[in-house]
Structures are given as C-alpha cells and as structure tokens.
Amino acid sequence: MSNRSNALQRIQEKQFDAIVVGGGINGAISALALSAHGLSVALIERGDFASGTSQHSSNLVWGGFKYLSNYEFLYVSGLCKSRNRMAKAFPSRMVEKRFFAALDKSSPYPPWFAAMGANVYWALGRFATQRPFFRSLKSIKRLEPSIDATTVRGGIEYSDSMLLDNDSRFVSEFILEAEVKGAVVANYLELEAATRTQDQWTLDLVDNLTNEALTAKCGLLINAAGPNVVPMGSELDAQPKARTVFSKGVHFIVPQITDSGRIIAFYDDSQRLFYVFPMGHRSVVGTTDTSTEDYAEPVSDEDRRFVLEQINKRLALEPLTEEDIIAERCGVRTLVLEGDESVGDKDWTDLSRKHVLDVDPAKGVISILGGKLSDCLNIGEEIVDAVAELGLSPATSTEGWFGEPSESEAKAFMRRASRVGLDRKNTFDTAPTFAATLWRRHGLRANKILDLVEKDPSLGLSFSDLTDMCEAEVIVMRDHEKIETIEDFLRRRTQLAQLNRPADLASDEGMQKAAEILLGDRGRVELKEFGSGGQGRPAGHDDEPRNV
Ligand SMILES: Cc1cc2nc3c(=O)[nH]c(=O)nc-3n(C[C@H](O)[C@H](O)[C@H](O)COP(=O)(O)OP(=O)(O)OC[C@H]3O[C@@H](n4cnc5c(N)ncnc54)[C@H](O)[C@@H]3O)c2cc1C
Image 1 (tube, rainbow, N blue to C red):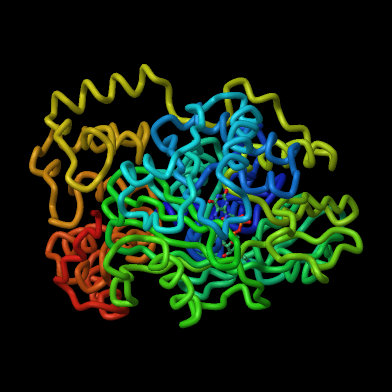
Image 2 (cartoon, rainbow, N blue to C red; image 1 turned 60 degrees about the vertical axis):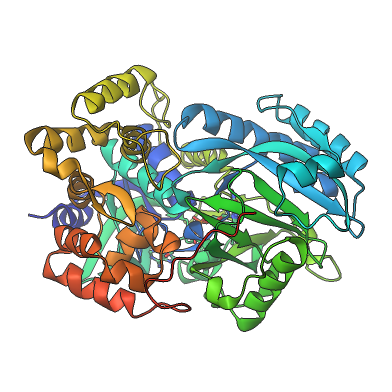
C-alpha cells in the first residue's frame, strides 16, 4: 500500500482529538504543535501543502520594522521575539539578511529619523542581529551601485531573517515533522461538509486525485483555511466573530539585480515599502498591497506595469520589461477586522496584520484568522493552549517541539557526506557545499541520500545544468515528501519553477529524468505540459544578471 493510501485509510479508521483543515503555515504549525504535545491529529489540505498564500510570501521571518510607523511596539516586540526563536531553532533554513533602505526626497521619513527607528527596532529585537547603520549617499553609491542615487538623500542598513528554500518548503517540512510525531497528513484531500453530533465531528471529505469520498471523525476542528476561513466557518455553522478582508500582493522573479546578498528597500509611489530580494541566482521584486474581494485573483496587467515601473524608476539598470519576468507569485494577505472595525477611510496599509484565534467551545471549532510565517511559533503555542481550554489534555513536550536536528547530528552528517564526496561546491545554491544544501533541505532525511550514494556513487552526481541536485535526492523526495504532481516538485518542494522558465525546465533531459523518478511516465507528460504553460521569453534565453 502506498504512503498516501495508508494515510487515507488511517484518516478513515481513527478517531482524532483534532483535525486541522488547511496545509498552509497556520495548519502546518498547528498539526506539529498538537502532535508534539501527544494529541492524535490529522491534517488535510485540498491542494498541495502550502499551495495557498503560504507559497506567495516574501519569504521573510521578520519583526515587522514597518509596523513601527503605526506605533505597534508590543506587536513588533512579539514578532521580533518569534523571529529570534526561529533563527535559533532553524540555523540552516533561515539566514540573517541585511536590508538596505534607500530614502529619497519623497520618502515619508528622513534618513536620520529612519536610523533612529532602526535602532529602536534593533532594541525591540533584543540586539539579536547585527547592529543597524545610517548610510550616507556616498556609501549607498559604493555598496549598491544598482540603486539610482540621483534623488536619494541617504539610507539605513539593518537586519531581519529570510527563508532560504522558500516559504512553501518551510511549511511542508513542518507537516512532515508533524507526521514523524504521529500526525496523519494528506494533501489533495478536501473538506466538503461536516456534521456535529454529541461532541463529535463527522467530516465528509473528497480525495481530489481520485474523486473518492471519505469520512473522518474528530472531537475538535481547527479551521486553518487561510483566506477561506470565514466561508468555511459559516459552512460549519461556526462563523468566527471577526471578519476578514483581503490584500493582494504580487512579486516577480527577474534576472539578478544585485549579487551583494542584501535586500534593497525603498518607498514606492504609493509610499509603501518595496523590495528587491535575492532568490538563488535571481532577484525577486515586489510587492503590491491592494484590496481585492477575490482571494484567487490572478496577476493583472496593472500589477505588472506598476511593479516594473517602480523598480525601473529606482534602479540604475537597463529597464526591466515583462519579457524579463521569469516567474510570478501572487497571493492574498488575510487581514482581520474585529468588533465594529471597518476599512472605512483608513489607509489600507494601516490595517492591522495581527492574527486572531477564534474559539467556539459550543461547536468545538478553533479558527485561525490572519497570521504570518514570522509569527508561527506563537500560533502553535496558542493552539495548544486553546485545545486545553476546550477539554483536551496536551502533554508537556519534553523536548523542544520545533527546530532542526542537533549540531552534533549536523556535524556527523557533514563528515559522512565528505567521505562519500558530496562536499563539492554548489553552482546555484548559496550554501558553501552541496552537503550543506542537503542538510538544510532535508535534515536527518539527508542521511538517506548518503545511504543511496554509498551504494551507487553515480546517484550523487548533478543531473542537470539547471540545478545542483542529484538523483539520490530526488529518490528520497519521492519516497518521503508526498509529491503528487510535477508542480508540487518544481514550484513548492524546490525553487526550480521560480528560478527557471517552464520551457527550459521541460526541455532539460535531467529534469525529464527527475520527473520520471518522481511520477513515472506521468511525470514526463506533466513536465511537458508544464513547459507549455510559461510566458515571456522562449526556452534557451540566458536571463543574464543585470548587476552593475
Ligand atoms: C504578498 C505577500 C507577502 C507576504 N510576506 C510575508 C513575509 O515575508 N513574512 C511573513 O511572515 N508573512 C508574509 N505574508 C503573510 C503570510 O504569507 C500569510 O499570513 C500566511 O502564508 C497565511 O497562511 P495560512 O495558513 O493562513 O493560509 P494559506 O497558506 O492560504 O493556507 C490555507 C490552506 O487551506 C486550504 N483549504 C482551504 N479550504 C480547504 C478545504 N475545504 N479543505 C482542505 N483544505 C482547504 C487551502 O488550499 C490553503 O492551502 C505575506 C503574504 C502575502 C500575500
């Protein structure tokens, strides 16, 4: 029986303490926290894990510097605390990044004031990062020549953290970790309806890969459906008290703009902070923050025009055009309105980004509204407290319930990887060696890659000009990562579909081999279809860096 069939059977047979609906960051962290505290938990996700908003973020784990402009000191302090805990617990998956904010004459704050704010931010972050600096116009020109400094007055440099393998992989790793701790998890399994009788929920589910109907039973439901949380609440007759509105945000992946490793920040024409982030050997530009009613609204021509215009105005580079867009990310932030709060005349960007846990004891439903990747540990802990309030008895977690394996396990892996010759330099990844990349991506599962390479060293060789990956890695991903479609692999478990054009991926022989390893003949067919779905330049265009 395949892993998936096994999970579906167990979902039907077991009576769970709680079922989590939604496999974004909120659902993932809830499933991990509850299973690590000894409760019987299932997690279901109607698409792939992290296929909602959690694959479209800016990949930052940050303390929310910009919320200081709304005087949200307590909120920022809490986010910084969460960021610091995460940075300590995930030393390879997260990296401290320097932000380089260039302020011009139209920026809402002068550089000296921003520098004061950066110091307050550093203090709220308990001085856990490198110290911030005021940056003169001269040093901006020297350190980041890609910035058009014509109207810049000065700037600041400060730190926050970033996820190296993207938000979606970070989330799916939490889900796999929850499984290790006893949770039953399934992607492509959708909640269609639910009935509550005598303190029990019976869920009607549909397997979106086969259209088969299933049922499952649990005491509590955790509604972690992201933007779908309120509609789902009303279907369950457990409507959260707060309301939600959506803010659409798009990013574009373009040829590399700077190789400094820094994140460039500036104010856009609407006085919102706008960024250039590194992603592998590319750059990501964005984001927007516009009101929308439809959480699945795609990228519009207006979004493309706006983002490219902002970036071209502020960088001293050959202007980017739509043809330079290698890939797009587009998602909605779920913003929470409490009590009689309304959007009204407020500046849209001033709406709070805080999450709310709505607990309905009568119905046995906990809904998670809003939230951030950066705040996920707090959400995990609040969920454990909330289920205790509703009568479950979470055990005290004897070991930390989150985090990477220990330093000694990492060192043992590195020694072994060096013996089997996997400590070679990377071409695409920023980690110093391929072994370090494997450890970051797979943790203890990386040892299974070494097992395979020990038996057959050819499985350790890179198989494509587009990636440093080796076949043994793909085999271990097939066996453990619940990859059901080629897009799961290219877009969410790896960054391949963000860093390369679809047609380039589809025409690459190594990728065809990987697709076959993962999904058999179907893999090759899906890869071909994926290749015809791209936009912009044809395959083979080199997307040369724009660095100056
Ligand atoms: C442009 C942008 C940039 C951002 N940048 C950052 C950042 O840098 N740092 C940060 O911390 N936060 C950031 N955020 C916020 C963060 O990404 C979101 O708060 C977070 O991803 C939301 O996670 P979620 O689990 O609530 O929702 P989602 O990720 O949307 O997950 C909900 C899941 O529920 C599933 N679902 C819905 N209905 C059902 C059903 N009936 N059955 C089964 N499954 C169902 C959906 O398929 C979906 O996968 C950003 C957001 C945006 C839009």
